[in-house]
Image (cartoon, rainbow, N blue to C red):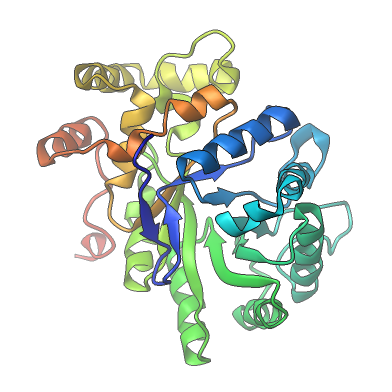
Length: 324
């Protein structure tokens, strides 16, 4: 069995698996039965971190993914105690003008709705899915403090926040004796490295663990698309591969020399970066999950990291560099 490893979630004492099971495919691309099989296999190998969002569901409608997870949890109530369950709030849930965003009212109502769909009494990690520039920091902390006091939420995190917002949120929290944001879920991979400029430095300064989403850049870093490879056959991905053909060819040659798939190397690279608490994988089948479970065991030396940087250049020594 693969040697699953665990890391602290930011400055908390909570331990989460380095590979976080993302569930956005559950429902829209992966039927309920196979989604449950993926969950079973993930827990069996030691993955204890499961991430979702209230809006996930695609053509099946918002909330469908949480409902699928809730049905899986209901099949065996012991499962709830074995996982760190994370979901998110912000995205529109209906046409109602107030059924979206981060007003205190919506946060409370959305949390209650997520608890019902997930069939649980509490959420371990409740994340702001995006910034709501109309919602003050005070309103956000008032709303989440109430959820924590009610026992409905344990930790608060953010997603897609810039560095300045992470700093602002945690400075305000510290001033009022709150724990504040404990993690930030950010797009981060070999192609999208802008988080290195501000987000990761801010997160590390404030003890905020970074959860990398899209570590395979939407499939660009997964190697040449095969038949029935889903969105990797899309026109958008084909165009992106065409634009980066030379770069991706160099990367795929490097991976071949290592005896590893591009997916495994790209994911392992993410786990070798500073400040990363976990990387999200979004398998649409048990087979895809099985192909990635060994990734935490892959070790990179300084030369290999340098070789990869030569293909996918880092963003630079920010945040101070541009000021001089």
